[in-house]
Image 1 (cartoon, protein in one colour):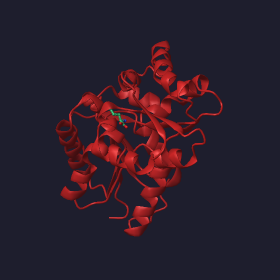
Image 2: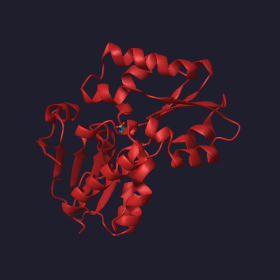
Image 3: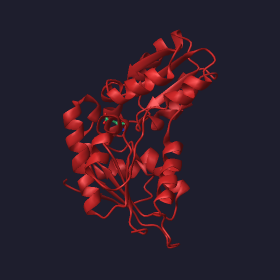
Length: 259
Ligand code: DGL
């Protein structure tokens, strides 16, 4: 079991931002990445549809003998992870907008959250926000259109820049000093965000924390890979393999899979 792969899924290519962190921290772990790009964006779907797609991805990864699954998608985590944990035996790691560190460290007492509609409207997000955001102004913003453009491979386009500018404007007007990235596609917008945000605004994403949590859960369950062979990293997509390949800097083979 220890040498079995870690499964990672997302609605598309964005979860590779999480996969990178995991691969950096756990280079000996074998991995299988599943990009459900044909069904992206999840963020505009209802809870039930997001749950069904998450079940489909999970079953594919379990059939490939994955020992643990990372739900590298805030939308799928906030809508479906409790159900997945209930239905399947293996450990699941999820990702949620990191509102807690932003709330604890904000000096201006205003933080911005950029996420999908599906995440911002989820129960889990509301519970976390209510818990940590006392006395804080939280500017929630749906990143409408961003996932679609990233999925098309348009990471540096003028269109994305214009959308982002509009999305962060109300946040800057509210004097935020933290911007929480609540979607695993958004770390790829970091260069644009750094260009658009004033220096005092810090950007938080949860990728590194997810990798640390993955390691901790593998350790706790005695599931760390014991082999020192070069890891096998497999990538599958039901979308355009070249776009996934590109975001991985052409370092890996990507296989098209009709799932
Ligand atoms: N990467 C997904 C997330 O973290 C994007 C969701 C979508 O497909 O809308 O939420």
